[in-house]
Image (cartoon, rainbow, N blue to C red):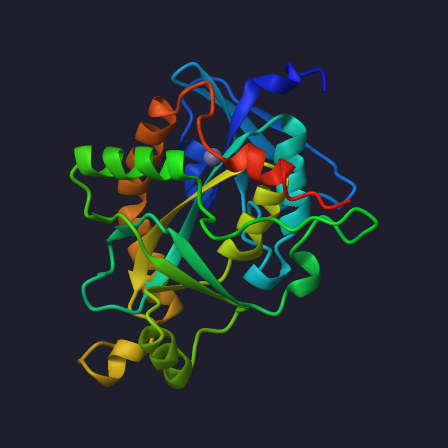
Length: 273
Ligand SMILES: [Zn+2]
């Protein structure tokens, strides 16, 4: 790729279209093709604090890909092709806990897969076999930076949370939501899986910043809280986009050039054949 030396773009940002006005100064849009197809959209490359950052809108510029049809493999492969070593992924989530309120942020530390996307969840369908470790799925180094920076900014942020990832695009039933919360899970989302697994398989650090947009439907039975609606999700996301951008900016500013986490070696030792 002649637009830039390959190893210069180390940070990838996957999120909503609200990030288009994130960069100051010149940006470049690049079309990246991978053997897994095209990513959700063109990738915007810009500069922040002297670091090159690649931004990819997960659902496409026009939000044309619903959660179950996002080209996850092509997205991660495209960022890898650009040289990305660290992904900051932002997501909207529903809360399963009263104390995790709409407008709060959560730096997830665990996920539970309740999707049906099995065949799309690995780059390795043989002959090469890879069993990636998932005990601690999110990059520990990036999580620390995110928690510290959110605290410094005095933005209400939970330093951990278990997210259950559902297939979507529909929301949960009341019974499902109650089951999720009784299982000890904190949040519901539709996109973190398989994104995180695919990134991990390629040795890319993955950090999630979840913005709570609603109370899903489970708490509805206990409290006078309305079940989730798309209007509520969009409104709360919009209202908190600036805070989200502040956190992401602070993280990028504080990311060091050299990685000191396990993510790369985890991917190396996962290769079986
Ligand atoms: Zn890492």
